[in-house]
Image (cartoon, rainbow over the protein chains, first blue to last red):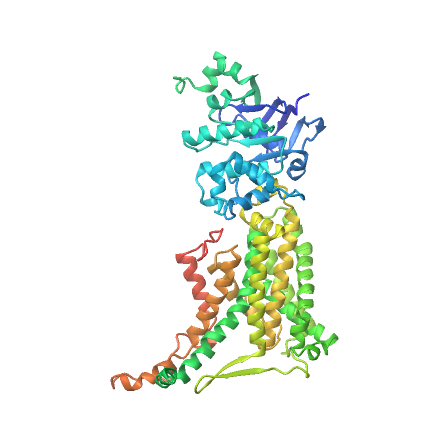
Length: 239
Length: 343
């Protein structure tokens, strides 16, 4: 049974729907990647899943429980965690305080989790007293992912974790995401850097116009000439 | 004896006069502004609207202390402090609950309806007018003392070679309370789980919500702190001067100036801003002729020292915070501590 199963999701911000039947399913140990052109409804899919957007039709089942339209603060307790694309740190608070806020819902000790996050993201340890707003884009992204890991989620939702990062940082963030996944956390992320992201995906979902266009393993999608022609852009592919 | 020599050269009378009129007076009024501005800035940081009834909440806190004074007139004599000061913690608690009630009754329904910020500001002005009306309805317009007969209003005179440095008991209590409040607030905001959650909501409310922080708890805590500090500021101001229904409405402009100078949403900025506005006021109304007169023998004949040489006459003191407000908004709209909002 998949850890997450979104079936035929329709929804939007009032007015016309943005999602017109999106279906996503991934297992507990997998990395799922959602790609597609601008306006395809990639980020909207994550928001609908995390209760930030009203789902009009369709169902979200997480770990065997129906969680459609559940409030975000409840979903955190269910084992989901979400990293928004922008404004995803508390800028005036220190790195360590950001991580503590991630653990806000925990009543037990979380010192070992902070150490675990520093294990995943070693640069953060040296900067732990520094306000998160003063860090570089890549390090800020590490803080954002670290904050989301503090609840020990079973599924981590990442909205364009490499947006605006230099290629060097992009590779580093992808490496960390793989490490987090190896540690037993399911990942569902939206990515603009489709080629690199699909290369590490167990499951890939190509959306367009608020619907699934192609679904398969990352390798299958990369190998599919239709996907490559329409969605991966031929120009960048010299490798 | 070098000290004695130094004292003989320095115009001690004039220097002590300056300390009394500018330094002590500035610190006193600045502390009152700071206690009010912290509440205004916290409310703005969390709820994003200007809380105009804050001055009246300070006055209401002082009136709560007055009512408590009638009920327990002997409380102060037992410990040798002004009765109103001894009862102040209760007045702070009552006013804190009152502030939460104010939010539940007026502001929360507006938030739930998702109104625009300008509607919140209008609501806050409405609450301000209502509170002023209620205070006058129950208390009249007269002036009262926050002292009972058994309280002695101690005045300390510290001789400094000539004129005495004068400080009164309520002023000392105001110093002490402000320092305790600032330290407690600092520890709360940097050490406690709820204090950090407040900073998180002020920083990024959406992210706070997806982290599972309860916005309702944070809002309630904000009103409790703002109400308690307002009551402390109002009570101590009324002890230093007198208690009137317009006690703190008159200082709402300097309080907002302090919050904006300090950077809206920055509690430490509000404290610094309060003291800055306080000192600016006392410096502006100070009669600088007093300090110039000892220089008379060294000045050429044609320079005349006027009898009164102040930047602003005392009656127009209110222009000082107003000027600071305008200057900050023109040249540094985020305030000295980089507030989160460009106004």
